[in-house]
Image 1: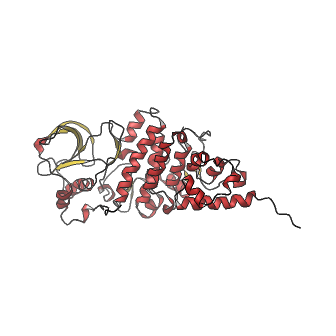
Image 2 (image 1 turned 90 degrees about the vertical axis):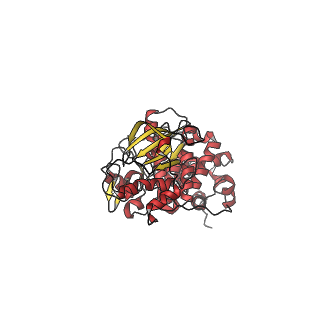
Image 3 (image 1 turned 60 degrees about the vertical axis):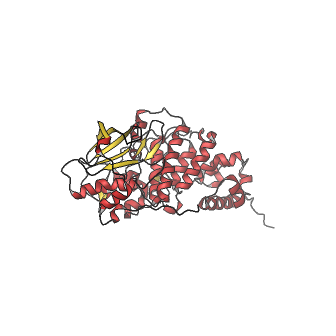
Length: 398
C-alpha cells in the first residue's frame, strides 16, 4: 500500500460541528426528496422510505432519518454527527450516505435504502433458509466493512446484527454510526446497560470494554464474534435469557457461547478466537477476512457439523480444561484440543493425517499449510513440542 491511508476524523473535535457536516456530507435540496412511508423509529425521530431525484441522475430509493421538531441545538448536533461520520466512509459493505437536508425543517439524513432491513430480524424471518456458503458470504461482507473501518482507525463500539443492514442482493452493510448513545444517559433501551458516562451493549461487548471502557478495533473484533454467532443461529439472542450480570460473570470465568445448531466447527473456532480474553490474541479484521475467504474457496470445510449436541443444562462452554494431548487420537481431535480446529481442513488436505507426522512439523511447514498468524504458529509449535514429549517412548535406564 503505497498511498497513505485515510484516517477518520471525529466530528466532535470541530469547534463548529456544522462545519464537519458541510465538509463530509452533501447538502440536498428538499424539493428533490419525496417521503413515501414511515418504516421505523430512530433515536431522534421517524425513519422513512422515500425517493431521491438528483438533477441528471435517475430516481432511487433512500432511507430518511428525520429529527423531530422541538430539538435542542445539542440534539441537532448529535443527530448530524452520524452524517459527518458516515460521509467519510466509501466501501461496499458500509452504508452509503446520500446527503443531508439542514437548511429546512425537518432536518434529515439520507442514506441508501436497504430492502431487507436489519440483519437480526431478517434472519429470524428466514430461519434455516440459507446455505452455509450464503451465511459465510454475509459474514465476509461484514468483516470486509469492519476491516475498512479499523484501517481508518474508526472503532464502532456497537457492532451487532441489529446494526447490519441487508439489501435485496443479500449484501450486508455496517450501519449505525450514531455515537450519542454512548455519551448520554437518557435512553431506556434494555440492550444498553448504564455505566458511568454512557451505555454499553453488554452481550456484544468485550470484557475489557465493559470493565474499563477500553474500546478498540480488538473489542470490535469480540463483537464481530458475537455477530457470527447471531448469523449462524439465525438471529438467536446471544446468551439467551441470561441476565447481563450473569453474562459478565460467565465470560469472566472463561465460559463462551457454544456452536449454534449445524454450525461448521471451523466457524465456531473462529468465534472462539474472536472471544480470546487477551485482546492482543484476537484475530484482526484482515485475518478474519482471509480466514473466511479460505473457507469460501474450500466449501468442503463448511460441511462438517459438530456431532455433539449442546446440553441444555449447561449451555455455555468452559474454555479452561483442555483434554491432555496424549488422549488425542487424531489430528482433528488434537487441533480441537488446542482450539486450532480452523486449520483442520488445511492440515488434512496437506496430507497431515497422523499425529506422528504432525509432531515433526516446523515453522516453515506451518506456513506452507496456511498458518500465517505468529500467535497461532507459536501455539501450534508449543503443542507439537508437548506432543513429542508425551509420545516419546520412555527412555531405558542402562
